[in-house]
Length: 290
Ligand code: ATP
Image (cartoon, rainbow, N blue to C red; front, side, top):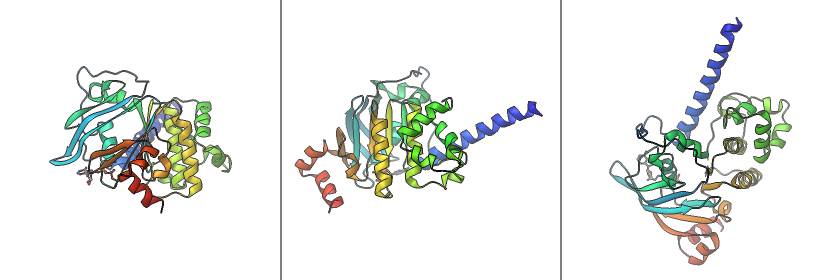
C-alpha cells in the first residue's frame, strides 16, 4: 500500500502545482489559448540573472496589424522602482506581456541585465521575474502550501519570514487553523487584499531580482491598500520593481514614472517633476484627487 501511496501522493502534488500554475497564468492575462508558443533559441542562455536592470529600447508591437506600442523606451536601474501609468487601453499590460515574452516585439528590444530577453531561455527569464498579478488565483490547499508555491523547496522558516514581510502574519495567527487553513476553491475564502498579500509572499520567497506588481483595478479598502503598500515596500528593498499603477497615490515614491498614451511614452519623470510639467500625469492626478 505504501508503495502506491508515495507515487500517488507525488502525482497529487504535481497535479496541484500544474493546475495552480496554469490557473495563475491563464487568469493573469487570459492568454493561454491564444499565445503562440515561443521556442528557445538553440544557443539560448540558461543563466541566473541577479542585478535586475531592465531596459526597453524603442519597442514597437502590434496585435496582428493593429499598432499597440510605438517606440517605447525606458531603463530601470537595479533597486529602482518604476511605475507605468496611463489611460485604459494605453498599453500598460502589453508591456508586461512582452517582458514575459508571451509575444515577440515587432521591433526594438527588451533586455535584462544587459541581455536581450530572446537570448535567454524562457526558464531563465521566468526565474528572473516575480509577478504579483491583479487577481491571484490560489489553489484549494492550505495557506502554507499556497505561499510555498513561490519556491517549492523553501523551508517552513523561509515561508514564515516571507509571510511576515508580506504583512500576513497577524491575519494568519488570528485563524483557528493558522497557516494550515484551506483557502477554498480559487482562494474564495480570502479577500482580494489578502490574496494579493499571499502573492507578495510568494514573490518574496521566489527571490527574483525583478518584481512586477500589477495593481488591482478594483478598489480595496484603505486598510488593505495600506497593508499591501507596506508589504510592497519590504519586497522592493534590494529588488527592482515595475508597477502597473491605476491609483497614482500608490506610486508617488517611484523613482521614475512612465506615462503612456495610445502606446507612446508621452512623459517620464518622478511625481513632483511630472506635476510641475502640467501634462497628462498632472491631469490624471487632478482627476483622481478631486
Ligand atoms: P487597462 O488599464 O484597461 O488594463 P492597458 O493600458 O493595460 O489597459 P492593454 O491591455 O495593454 O492596455 O491593451 C492595449 C490595447 O491592446 C487595447 O486597445 C486592447 O484592446 C488591445 N489588446 C489587448 N490584448 C489584445 C489581444 N490579445 N489582441 C488584440 N488586441 C489586444
